Image (cartoon, rainbow, N blue to C red; front, side):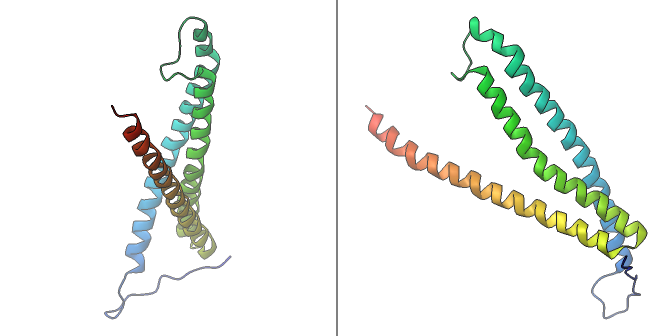
Length: 152
């Protein structure tokens, strides 16, 4: 276990280790709170998906889905979205727990692992943003010619 030292600051140092530790402790507390809320949200999303897939599928006999798809498919989409949301929540939770324990125990390995999970969180969110923007661009490329073609 590597131990990092709180080096005393002097006039030439740009930052204060004590101040940074305080900020990281507070950040890890908020990250933990957001991760717990995220886990609860994922659980509720899964329950909603199961309700839609199992309970609302009985409505197919009497009514049609508002978007024209079977309720089972909509439930499956909810499950996929819940699984997708679970990935960044796990990174956030790992960041929070490892950062807090690393700071409290003065363990450089834990702090490094916390930052690694924070990096992974941002990397995942960046890639997901690129994918979503690409899908939007593809929809726009397809939708505009179709709208022009179908216009009276």
